[in-house]
Length: 193
Image 1 (cartoon, one colour):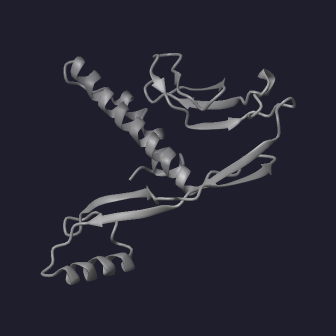
Image 2 (cartoon, rainbow, N blue to C red; image 1 turned 135 degrees about the horizontal axis):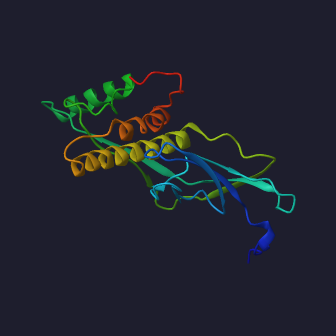
């Protein structure tokens, strides 16, 4: 049975938030990287950055990895005269790195990882002084989450515009630009394309 951490060993996160509607930023400490309410408009906002706060009473930090056997299954639609020709077209697209482009000629129908029957679960634990830098896969997930926040903000801005008689307040749209740049991985000095 795993030991239960003492209350003073609870990990605290410093979460940083940016409201796309009010264009204000704030920090807050939580025991997880959770959403918070904007202190101005009360909108639910996801943190754009979270970091663990150091605490001398805190237990040592570890980066814990698990690996499990998966099959990466991709299905694309191919128009061809024979099954062999269809496979050749798909193989050529794979070799060229275009099989995931999801084009009308080669639509992406399935792309996911499936667990292998009888998979082996392996664990690795490494003591760390600070959390390692987030991998590109995590950066992508964060960008997708931020992009969804921009989409929600865009819909809300248009709804507010409809409620105001059909006139959209540019201020509501302008407040989404920093989040949109973040989702695209652009710096503040970059111009939106």
